[in-house]
Image (spheres, rainbow over the protein chains, first blue to last red):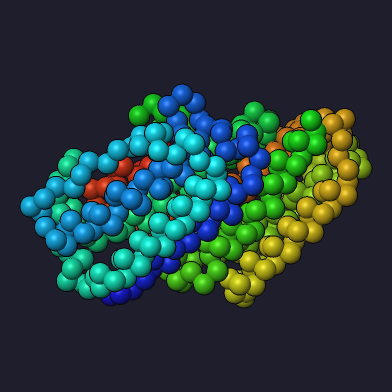
Length: 182
Length: 182
């Protein structure tokens, strides 16, 4: 069963860089730099965030759980690192870098040979407290899909006015208001 | 300017079948058949919906605007046609069919040679009333992105329980409640 869970997770994780590449490589610039307003991310920022996560978040945290269990808390994640680290890079460079990092991390994940017993091991999240290895890996997958949605949404929002009366049929253009108010 | 608008739209429209193919071909079955509850669509349904739209919605409506203007209302769209039309087909067949239809429709769109003056031409939507050609084409793009988001969301929702306390950080898993209440 852990084998099914892991292989299903990897089936999504392995696709994410390819999906992002398909969507963003050679896309007209206005889509890459569009965002949803002040302090929101554009697709360029999202690529940098994916890269920073590959370097500092998922596999390092998996390793902390396996090596230290709950005794050593994860390093807090820096949500704004990509603003400093990727500002000189092209879209193509970021896509290539993310793909290479993800490939290497999936290989590391496979090499850790995570059995069903290991999935229930726990670590300590600096804000959330006790979290399990299985929760961490499922979050990796859901986080991928979350940011793919962010990219789609940001691109769609460029046409929010242009679609005219159709806006009421397009949930991608409607559902932000409740979230902004949160 | 219409040239920029159209070529930007096509840059998204042409990618959608490739994105969907990358995400869904050979994906483990549970992701294909997962949905968000009663009367919601799974990724299989979304593929059928994309196909039905290519056949009956976007280009046929563009042609109605160009040929008849506001005098002839669009044929109402059948949101459930895919439930009847695609139930015997495999995921691979649906992906191939959508890709072929989209390719042909982009070729038709290019052959219509839509200039800036034509973009302001209007037609009659059976529910929304007067809509312009530009609004229709922008809606085609936003509708693609909307259903790509639906596919991501449905896949992520499979892990809604599994992510444990991380659920509060994942907007893809949180933002449905307000919509269901609408």
